[in-house]
Length: 108
Image (cartoon, rainbow, N blue to C red; front, top):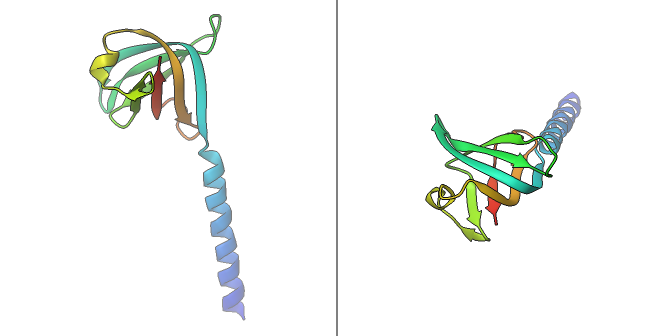
């Protein structure tokens, strides 16, 4: 009987911990009026993006790496295409666990 209670308690604690982790790692989508993409490889990072959500807003500086999905007008893009222009608008996807790391960058 003690074994069943201990096993049930351990399972409940594990589920609570997993739920807490899942809640802490939510996806965030930010529509940006202006995104300045700066190609500056450093370590694992390929560059930075200064993300402005409005004209008067201060930028949120984020990084992107080889795992970041890049799209230009909805189509997959290579970093070489993005290096041709600095100033963009679009959608930035990140998550709450690493809010300064870009998961995907959808530029217009």
